[in-house]
Amino acid sequence: MSTPSDPLALELLDWYRPHARMLPWRSDPRPYYVLLSELMCQQTRVETALPYFERFIARWPTLEDFARAEEDQVVLEWAGLGYYSRARNLLKAARAAVERGGIPHDPEQLRALPGIGPYTAGAIASIAFGIAEPAVDGNVERVLSRVDGRQEDPKSPAGAAALYERAKGLLEGVPAGDLNQALMELGARVCTPRNPNCAACPWAGSCVAEASGSPQDLPNKKKKAPPTVIRAVAGIWSQQGAVLCGQRPPGLLGGMWEPISAACEGDPATTLSAAFLEKTGLKVKVGQRLGEVLHIFSHRRLTLEVYEIRGASGVPSALSDYEAVDWVDAAQPHVALSTLARKTLALAQPQQPELQWLAAEVDDDAC
Ligand code: SF4
Image (cartoon, rainbow, N blue to C red):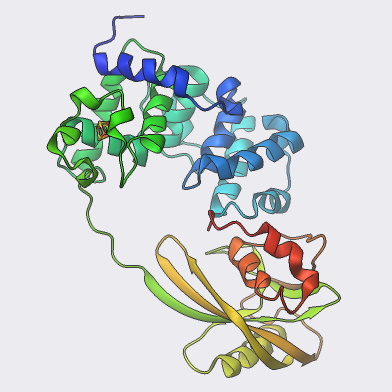
């Protein structure tokens, strides 16, 4: 191992070793565990992802076991973790890796797997295989922008290239997996977006942003466009603890199940009656308003008004918009419900106690 070129790397590692959270994919960084954990932790807190990780490795202990899983089962296990395309990509990546004889070491070959971008490739290459490849996520962008006082937008091509080179320089002569994880850990726990805890930071004495007195002002990011606001209605029709749900087509929340719903620009009850008829063939009576669910997707803000369905005539079938329509058993759902669907169903809880299980499972951290 050559001499480290940057003393910041050694200071960071000295801080990381006693402060690192004990996580199963850290104590046993086999490539399959690292792949799983990296896909699960994207846009999700580690604490939220951890029980999912434990369930996945209990059910599918090896990469080969996982590659043989049914997609529906994977999505069902993923339910509540959000961003469901990650579950499908994870399965595709695992199958592609098994076909080629295992998870590749080389970052370029890793990037060729479905759903694996430069960050995830760098994380797997460095943590699982010790290869000196940067893994620059939002945490790392923030920490490096602040310590150097970088003014360029980290998402711009020039800003991203400069950060990649800076991160690469830090890896010289040190264990790459540890250093990458130390950077991520510093960003997640100390150099946080709004309130960086500079007093607890190993880089405080060298940090340009801290010296400026307003470290939270970096990085300089282009302002995001405000989210699109969507209004919609949903109807809860329950019988003996089961709720009539539809399976969404490919796209946003594709494949997930939800109570029958529709976008709404006019009268909610009229819209809901029309939606049930068009989508399921049922003529329904719309009952009381149960409440409202607010849900933020990455770029959309949804307000969903939820109504009780008091009576319906006809046999439900998937006529338009849904891939399938079915009764979802309250005690043992056999399909994947999104967090939005769980929030929606939880509103019915006071009136329909048999749905209490749903309220208990709602997790606001994942969307
Ligand atoms: S000193 Fe403060 S701003 Fe600088 S890297 Fe540490 S926590 Fe972030």
